[in-house]
Image (cartoon, rainbow, N blue to C red; front, side):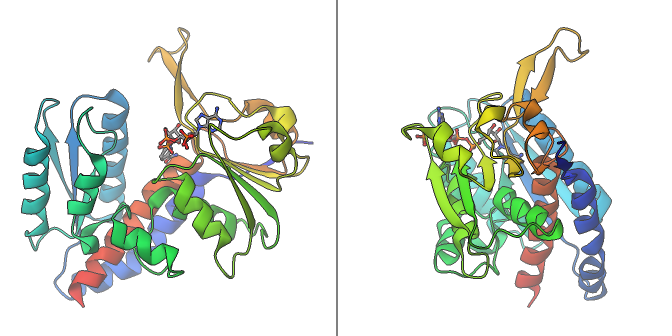
Length: 291
Ligand code: NDP
């Protein structure tokens, strides 16, 4: 059996196209959606992600401004930048690209962003709203993108066993809340580095969301035949046959596609969905601030 590939690039582009009407509505009111992206340091992967976000803004007509800060910058200087963007009425969305250099408290920076401009959806107010069962606000982009893939691909998860591997603040934890919410109704298990018998737990899962950050950590023989596999991981592995010297692999062994029913590819799965949801959040943030 070969799994149906869930094409995040195609679905992401559809979502971006569907934002056009809302974009035109905003423009007709004299409002131009504007995203500010702050990037600190020279991490090559972060620069690729930020470039992809800028390209998505271009596709959607959203103005983007990039603020490059040097690696050695202080926490206070990053906070000053965020505060300046908070008080700039022409900016509707603020994103501080993760990871930040060692020694910088990411939560402090995230929580300094005005909740209405928090297009990453990581501010404690936005996460708190989600915990309260309200998913109508600014949601974390990657878990929201996963929910969209499942919804638009008509994968029924109500009452099914969903395993999320990883409990980070940006992916695993909000993912577990979204899947367990009323109306979605998955039976959620969340695994992490202390989980015992992970392979056995995985073999019982109808849906596996892998967000670990370890290349091909989830083995294909852990996958229940016909299960849906969402591979969030993006890992660079050395490959001298590539011009770049590396290739991207997910957190799930690639031959899991022989066993799964549906699977997201890496690249081209969750990554483009994350970007599409960032565009969606930027439009929503602009609408919220223009009411
Ligand atoms: P984090 O490093 O913040 O979290 C990783 C999680 O994996 C932790 O909860 C950790 O457990 C868990 N983990 C680590 N080792 C094991 C193990 N041996 N067994 C079980 N669980 C384990 O990563 P992120 O959530 O930020 O990102 C995860 C992956 O997703 C990365 O590859 C990242 O690049 C990718 N990513 C992709 C995005 C996209 O758009 N496609 C967006 C965001 C991230 P513990 O809590 O116990 O330490």
